[in-house]
Every structure is written in structure tokens, then in C-alpha cells.
Length: 257
Image (spheres, one colour):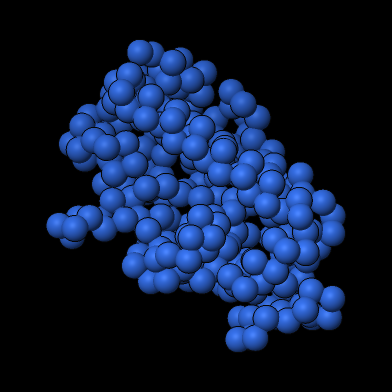
């Protein structure tokens, strides 16, 4: 049975005569962005201009992409690797909010608001980011009328996801929320050829502290639940990695209230 291992110039150029920035996106990176459900629904001319006007930056693991409190300057997408979003509380505690996979766009709210970043974003593993500077972002809004409506759709999806997360926090026990999080990571960071129901390695290195932050639980409680799943043969725990052996049982746990 197979295993699945889960800078623009300061002046804003015209859309008509701007040349591609270097470095270029690789073909797999470009395909990853094009596969994004929201991005794929944009008109071909808008997608073309976003690619043409974007700035490509490659980061090593742990490098900061944006810093909380700094003025937001870019709308950006993960093209390869992963982006970890983290927020620091007034008391100095750092909380991991989410991990973003290739094809996901973020930062439009901060750019539109002309406000500070509400989070830190770091590369998780070697990561490529396609970013669009604020000036170009607003020019795209003027020259592509459909872009504004598409951004409203994107924000609506984010709000629905936020409501689902709030519902889960209020109604699901920790074991069910952990199962849902493992499935979420498996589906978004595993090989696209992975077949549902088959054994799959989660392709995102996570420590228990990070899982605890994502779920709003303690490291000790997360460790207890992971060990229980391992004893039941549902998952296998290795150094900084988790293998899902029984995806159907994990899905059944995620449905428990």
C-alpha cells in the first residue's frame, strides 16, 4: 500500500508595460497557485497580471515574511513550502494561528485597511512567496472591476471558516478537534496523489506545542490524546512527524460531539 508524504520598484509601473520580476516561479510553483480554488476562478487576464506584476521571494525555514505591527505592504500567496502565522499577545505569549499551504492568498484585509500586520508570518520549511505590493494591488482593483467582487468572495470564505472554528471550539471535545486538525494538515500538505483511506504521512513537521496552540489546549493534553491514538493504531508518532494509519477512524473521531 503506497505511503503519501504528507522586489517591485518603488514607483508603481503601468499594467500595460510592466516586465516580469526575477526570480521566476518554477512550473510546480505556478501550478500550485493556479490550483487554488479561489485563484482559478479569476479571469485569465487578471491571473496573468497578478503573475506578471508579482514579486517572487524565497525563504529558508524560520525566516520572517511579515512582522506583527509593521505596516502591511503586500498581498501574498504561498507558492511552495508552508507559511506559519503566529500572533504575540500583550503579555508576550506567542500563539500559532494557522499554517497556509501553496495556493492560498493572505493579507488583503491589512492592505485594504492600510493598517499594521496583525500577525507574524514565517516560512515553515523552504518556502516561496508571490507577493503583490499595495500600489499594484490597488491598481489591479481599478483596472479589473471583477477583482473587488472576487476579494469579497475570498473574505466571505474566511468568515465562514472562522465561524466553523468557533463552533468546533464550543461544541467538540479536544480529541475530535485534534482529529480534525490532523485530517486538515494531511489533506493540505500531503502529496496530491494520496488516496483517501490509505496510510499517509503528514507532510508538515509539527511539534506538540504547535498543535496545542492551534487547538487551544495544553501540550500535556495533546500528548495524552496523541498517545491514545497511537495505542489504538490510528496514527504513528515519529520524530517531528505523524503517520496516519487509519484515516477512516480519524474521520469518525472528528465527528464525535
